[in-house]
Length: 213
Image (cartoon, rainbow, N blue to C red; front, side, top):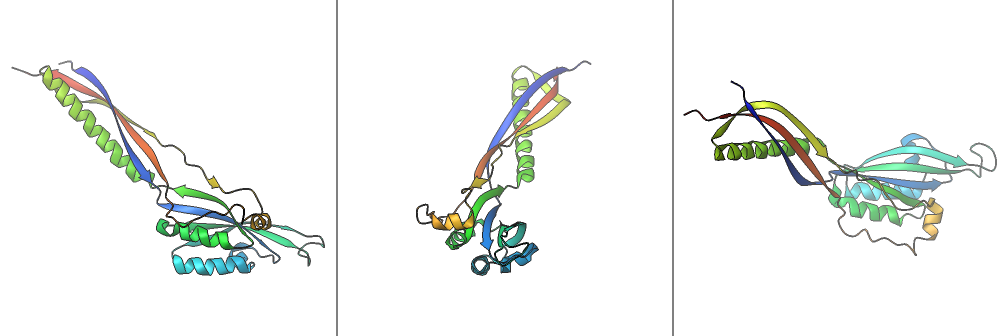
């Protein structure tokens, strides 16, 4: 028996909240170190990290890059180093406080803030919901004309995931940032979150037959 084909697409949309954040800071120091030893190069950064650890023990800290300038040869007395340090923050309820601590450092400049989302599990949940909606719709439509869904010929899924880029706080170096801090003060006292909408679309070709009898 040849089956009829009913093609249905259903989309489910939901709001997804970030599960962690990455804070990138630039730090200026007269001392030159490499790797995570750079944390000890700046008293400002060292003090900030100690305070941050009291607020959030689980924070992860990595030195991403080091650049330096010198007017008296490599690593001379007049050398100045700039460190780019990344803070991984899982406790987002503490993010505002952590940003506030970083903003207080005289030689620390917050460069950017980026978000990370647990997308895969949410995508799976949404596509299952879309599939259920498509099946329910097919059953109701076929019931109205005396047909039944007897199988599936094909099924596909697609997703809409808007990219949330980094939030840049400016391009100034740490000393320049410190000089203009009073003019461009930022209040990080409130809780900071990031959300985005994601959608899952399921397209199904159902096999249908007329009800017997």
